[in-house]
Image (cartoon, rainbow, N blue to C red):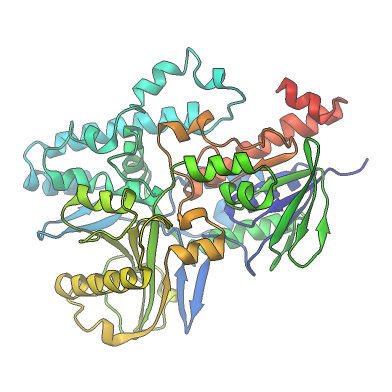
Length: 511
């Protein structure tokens, strides 16, 4: 009997995991990737002995990673050496206040009560609510497919939507637990790691702080890219073929299915199933013929913010800089207005510094340092004047000045061996991210669950999607869930129904 075939477009973590799951289930799978290495945004830079993760630096929800490896017949511990990072962050405010967010309850009590007498009780209640949000979300919304709107807004789900405070705003809800504005900021800035403003994000996202403090922030030795390398190795072991330096030019459609694809170099590939792991809005806009659908996605959907990134190879070690560091600027609300409404760089930016050598000595040569700096900024917007060179220069100067005054690093600029800069144009050009939005489509109430772009195309019944801009959303463990859900949907709707003798079009109509 002929093996079912699949072509996956994009070797981001969602594409790799989907390809591996399909291969494990008997598919003959080929992955085509525009860049010369797998990983997508979860890639790495290696230069002069310095190793940087390009995108994500937080290894969260290890149980999701465990399940992914287990589904492929592997043990995560055989592939990844995880180290817990605690305190998870050192947070610095522009008025001099410092907090170490830690799973050590006693330390948290001491720190919080110095800021606000009732804050520790508020913290315990906040984490308890986050735990409830996390468990309900994962079981009832994030970790399952919705095949129609009545499943999503079912009688059993509707009360849960209110329990999750999905219609409330995260920052506003945090005010129920803390009065001090700095504490509200300390327990909402994590929204930025999903590219969201806490003033717009659903209150459901208190689950982020629960996952970090209760389940832990981890670091895989070798960097986050070690996870990509491990999953790629497992996929290849299962028979997945990877073709690099192979950007897709267009998908060839016939009636209600995708018949094949053409690469930029003219090669053509055919398959039974196609899975898009390139950014979903990009695929609709650039690879498919339906202009109305593409226009709707591009013009009507909300997108996450972007980032200015500095990757600094330093010939001196700054051990006073912790593994994860967050520097929050003043005028917290105004800064988000600048990022999300005006699509620019705030006057006083917040930023994050990652120093992996604190945990992984191999991240930099002996006596030297590898520093990664992330500055949130607005995404590309053709309707507004955006001078990216000026914004990059201003962000760089602000970061260096603040590290000089607060981290005893006045000589840092003089010790830079090299600097690599990513900004919204880079995210767009290298990773095909619409608007240079570093995290894909946003996650307000109208863009989650069944209301988010579906993981199967409405018209082309053998075209599926996995990744940040489809269900369930962005973030590495969530994209791993996306790979599981997409694979489950393919096996349910396509392979199983084909065996029973249904035509694909009939299966789609019934599903």
